[in-house]
Each structure stands twice: as C-alpha cells, then as structure tokens.
Amino acid sequence: MKTEKAERQDEKGTEGSRGAGPGRTGRRAREAVVRGIPVSAGIAIGPIYDTTDVPAEAPRRNIAPGEVEAERQRLAEAVALSRKQLGKLKNRLGVLPEEAQEELAPLLDAYVLMLGNSRLLRGARKRIEQELTAAETAVQDEAEAIAAAILAARDDDRAGLRRRADEVREIARRLTRNLTATPFRSLKEVPAGSILVAEELTPADAALLDPSRIAGVATEEGGADGHTAIMLRALGIPAVLGAQGLTESAARGDMAVLDGSAGTIVLRPGEKALAEGREALAAFARERARLGKLRRLPAVTTDGEEVELQANLEIPAELPLIQQSGAQGIGLLRTEFLFMNREDLPDEEAQVGAYAQVLEAMGGAPVTIRVLDWGGEKDMQALAEGIEPVHAGPNPALGLRGIRLLLKRPELLEAQFAAILRVAERGPVRILLPLVTTPEEVKQTREIYERVARRLRRRGVALPDKLPEIGAMIETPGAALAADAIALEADFFAIGTNDLAMYTLAVDRGEAEVAHLYDPLHPAVLRLVQFATEAALRLRMPVSVCGEMAGNPRLVPLLLGLGIRCLSMNASAIPRVKQAVRALDIADCARFARRVMEQSDPARIHELVLGFAEGAPEKA
Image (tube, rainbow, N blue to C red; front, side, top):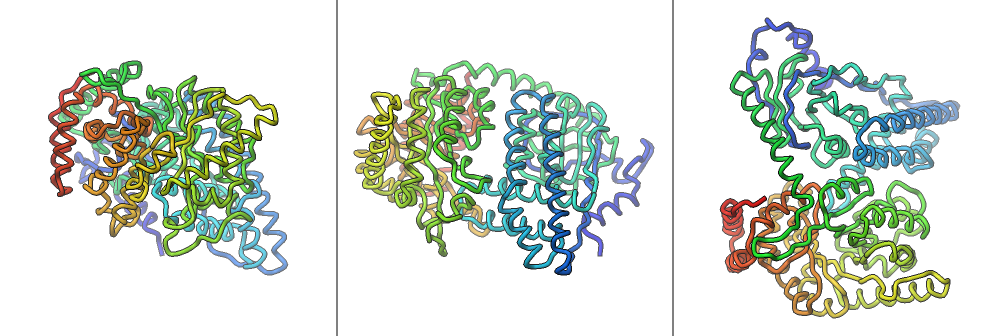
C-alpha cells in the first residue's frame, strides 16, 4: 500500500509538475493561494525550488538471538557516523550570521549529547537485547516511546514539549538513515533567489540554508514553535510552515510571492498580485527600519510613565535575540534547560558557568532566575533516575511540583542557590520561586537560602552585602487570593498568566476538546491579576507579568491600567509592545481598565480590548 506522501508524489508526476515548461496549461497555470502558519516575518518574491526528502526505508524487523551483538555493533557504527556528521554541520555554522550561530550551535550540541549514553540509546540497546529487534526498529520504537511520554506531559509550555519530542525524533531519523544507508537531502543546488518548498524541513536542513541565497521557505509540515521555525527566524529568512497542499500545487520554476507575516504563498501570481507583493516587500523594509529605531528609545508613555520591558529566556541560544530586541533585562530565566538531555544533575560549577554566561551577555541589565520548575508533568531524565519522588497520578499538574518539590528535595534548591549567589557580584540578579501557594513556602525557602549564604561565606566566597531578592510566582488562584500574606514574605511578585489562566479555568489549552475555553481575558483571571497586583502595590513591592499576556500589544493598555509597570515576554515581541507603550496615556489606560473590570461577560471584554487597541494612536 502506498503512503499518502507517495500517492501525492505519483499525482505530481502524472501531472508533469516538475520540469514542465512555461507553456503548460491546466489548473497549475493559474494563480493560486496556499495558506499556512506565519513563522518568520518578511516578503519573498522568486521562483519555486521544490525538494523532497527521500524517507529511510526501515520496515520492522526481528532478529535471531545470535544476531544481537551484530545489531549492537551496527548501532554503534551509526552513532559514530552521526556524531561525525554533526561535527561537520557545526563547522559549517561559521559562514552564518553570528546570531544564527548562537541559535543553532546549542541545538547541535544537544543532538551530540543524545548520541552519548542517553536514554534513547540505552533504550534502543535494551530493545535489541530483550525484544530481539533490528537496530533501526529499536531506535524508532524507543524514540516514539520517549516522544509520546514527553507530549503526554501536563505542561503549560506545550511548545517546549513539542520541541523536545522533535529533538528525539530528529536524532532517531538520522540514526535510521545511517543504519539504512539512505542519503540525506542536498540543498547545495538551490538557485540564488529561490523560494524553497518542501514537505518538511528539519533543523539540520535549516542549518544548511544560506540566507544570502534563499529568498524564503515554505513547507507543508511544521509549526511556529519548533526548532526549525526558531532557526529560520534567527537566519532572517521569510517562512511559512504548515501550508497543507503546497507541494501538490507548486511546481519547480513557478514564480511565487511568500508573506511570512500573513502566512500566505501566492503561486504563479498575476500582475496585480505581483505588484502587491512588491509593495508589501517595500513596506516590510520600512516597518523593520522603523521598529529597529525603537531599540534605543525608552518605553515611556505619552505622559512620561516608564514601563520596563524585559525578556523571557528558555535557552542561552536566545541571548542574541534578546540583545537585539532592546530588552531592559531578563524577567524570567527558566533554568530547566540545565537539566534537559542529560543523565546526571548539573553540579554547582556547571550552574555557575551557565548563570555567569547569561549575566555577562546582559552587560549589567537585571536578570531574574527562576529556580527549577519540575514535577510530575515534566520529563527530565537526570531527575527521574534515583531522585524522582512518587508523584504520578491522574492530575500531576496538581501534585508535587514547583517549590513544593524543591522543599522536599532541598539538595536541588541548595545547589541552585549556591550557584546563583556565587555569580551575584557579576550583575544584578534576583531569584524567583515557582508555583508558590502559601507564605510558609517562601519562609522555608528563605531559611534554606540564608543557610547556603552563611556556608558560602564560611568558605570565603565573596557575596554582596545585600543578598539577591527572592520573589514569588503568582500562578494559581490560591496564590493570588493569598497575595497579601505572601507579599509579607516575598520581595517581589511575577504573575505567570499562562498557568494562572489554566488553573483558574481548569483548562489545558493543549487539549483540543477544551482549548477554546482557555481565555486569559476571562473576568475571573483578570480579577486575580488585579488582586495580586494591588497586594504588591500596597507594600510598594515590584510586580511584573511574565506570561503571554505581557507580549500581546493589545493587552498592554489593560495591564498598565491595572498598575503593572514591568512586562516580561519573548524577545521578538518587545519592539511592538514598546511601540504600543509609547502610544498610550496612563490615565486613559486606568479608565479603560476600570471599565473592563466592571464586565462579567468575556465576549464583551474582548470587544472592549479590541476596540481600545484599534482606537489608540500610534507614536514612533
């Protein structure tokens, strides 16, 4: 039986899409628009260059007991070859822009780590020995088992889960290709100025793209949050992913207009569409130049109120993007990256090195480090082996996670505190505690913190006279409602609106059947944000918002009207949020917030927010 992909290829072949001359007729000679997911902003106009990735044919195969050692050896050879290939790929990064190098190199390092004594390879070897399967079957089965476990986790960061699953699958694909001697796709022959079209583009493929030659990229598969999308944005290549039906409609040599902001590809554009594309290209260049000027301008409202715009950091590879965005610091440094894709826990020295790198890169701008946020919904191999507590259950998001887990396992907390304190004199730094629900949790944590500081001073480690502040994440209804009491123990608040909305509405937005109920503008969520903000302001304590609400320019007037003056978001969102801030008047925002908070209908709140955003004046 042919696969859907093979059937599409046969259909394309019978219609003569490849190599067809300019005189061809039929539906493919007409203008067509294909829509997908906007991934990397920009306009590309050029001829299509389609490329296919020949799949590695690896049918399931069992082996005899006497073949186990031979299969283990085959796997070892495939691992060695894969490591060599990744080494060459990393050497190739030297020709790419500096920011792209910073984005891609850590991912390749993660791939190399997975080719060590990783869970994937240990599991594959065990399957060869115990299930008597061939090496390629063992690799594929183990990779899918790991990916399924990752994707089944209950984590608000669904994009992060998908990226981790894709990493495992990508290494499995590379191993399978080497086990079956299937050649890799070559992108060397793509003509300059072309729009690359493919069913799918892997991160390794993206690393081979030359942004000076590739005008744009469009694929049938993929999404906005994967590593491929991150790389295309780092390379600055306009891109649309997830454009289903694209490869059936496009033919090599067809002219196309790709809009990476709107998520559209116009195939065989007529004179009107081509003219519109050229105008959009010029407009995008003007807009990019205008937003670029905002980098050095302050985020100040029209009436002189300063707003601090900071960036969230998930992995160090994002540092160049943060520096280019004009961020005034890092409002949320997620430390989970230190524990990912490794078999052992990062020791104090490894953490010192990681935190020092971030502080030095930020050049004196403040950095807020959130200690490990891990629990039943996050799969971290280093923690799962010998340290994982018994917390599996039907609702792991409601179990032992966040600061609850760290207080149960104080050795994890002590190592992080020690590392953070040791770099505290290299730049302004604060510490953030995840999933706080009671004042007692902050109090217990502070006792551990001060004990670690005393121990370091006895060792002769130089620490600042005033230790870095400790803040609480407000991300549950309980924390928001107890904010008055928690504020007496914490030094600052960071409101995590993603989890706050999830816990308040009992909705996992990763679940398709209830995702439509996830709404950060639900009046219950907004009242909790207001309650926590007012509790902090009464004590003149700093409070920020670091969820997705912070990065949405349309929601900025509401947050400012509620009293928020610090927003932390993805680096790419900062220029447009700054643009929104500079067009606002605080008095107008306060009146608008009061009107919103009087509402009980979410639909009406959405109408008000949209109406205010459309009516707000612009200011560069």
